[in-house]
Image: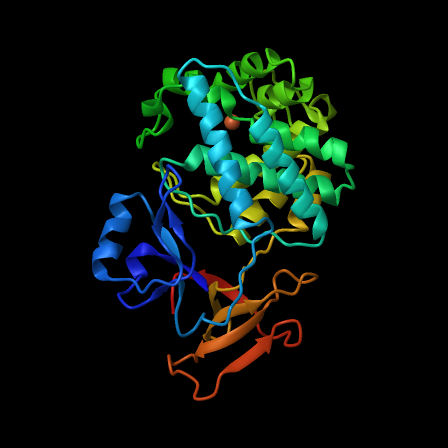
Amino acid sequence: MRKLPVDKVKEGMVLARTLYSNDGNILLNAGIILKNSYIAKFRDLGIWEVYIDDEISRDIVLKDVISEETRFEARINIKNAMDSLRYGYSLEVKPIRNSVCKMIDELMDEKDAMVNMQDLKSNDMYTFSHSVNVCVLSLITGISMKYDEEKLRELGMGAMLHDIGKTRIPHEILNKPESLTKEEFELVKKHTSYGYELLKRSDVLSTYASYIALTHHERYDGEGYPLGLRGEEIHEFARIVSVADVFDAITSDRVYKKRINVNEAVEYLIGMGDHQFDYNIVRSFIEHITIYPPGTCVLLNSGEKAIVVDVNKKYPNRPIVRILADGEGQIPTVPVEIDLTKNNALLISEIIDDI
Ligand SMILES: [Fe+2]
């Protein structure tokens, strides 16, 4: 299985993961053979990437840290919560808490699991998918930092609800493809205090959730908003959520900008450690991020093109790859797999879209 941009998908390829519509219905089942008519529809639906099985990727397994059902249910729960707030109803916390607890259970079952950033986000579902991703990434970091379940629950609830204040910002501004005006940007920044006000009202949520909503855009160097807090003045939970939030945002395609690759995002976080972010948290965070997830096509410094078939947890830059084309573009007659930890001269130069 591998993730492929929609413009590289060809008729006859097999869909490797079920595609869902925004309201939770199945659009296409995993295993279906793609036709041109389906591929043409992807763009209309705001789908930019899909998982496919093809000759070079059929035997590659890409595991998610939480089950597809839990991820999907969590997305629907946060969507329902945000939709009801938008229409003036009160926040129902219980389904969100259930989702957070399920995620914790699944993550605790496999504490060494690595996160393959593999969630596909359509435009309409961005905020909801993002909330779930930020929750998973924050929890993984909390587990790295040896948090107990109680602390993980507090962190997870705050992470799921961190952007809840966006329900008070008009859709047109949140999804505007052009750059925001100064006034619009000031309004978007208010989602932090709006979120605080919304969550503070709840008698079932602890103060951590509202605090995380208020301070997840604060920065370690004091350059964030809305309060301009710095360093340890920002609660550790919010310091974790801010790293997860930025990481997921920059690795996602948005209407107004293209995503960057996971390896570049990790470099960015390391570079920003002790400036925008708490360096110790960045370290715990990246420990569980797969830089080159299985199925990623890469160019090696030898000029060979390869596909990642497995990861080496201790050496994230040196996965196991299968050579698909030599420097001249010739396809090897017998498949060759190379463990990059055993061949120091070989390096990954860059991620490529396709072979
Ligand atoms: Fe935010």
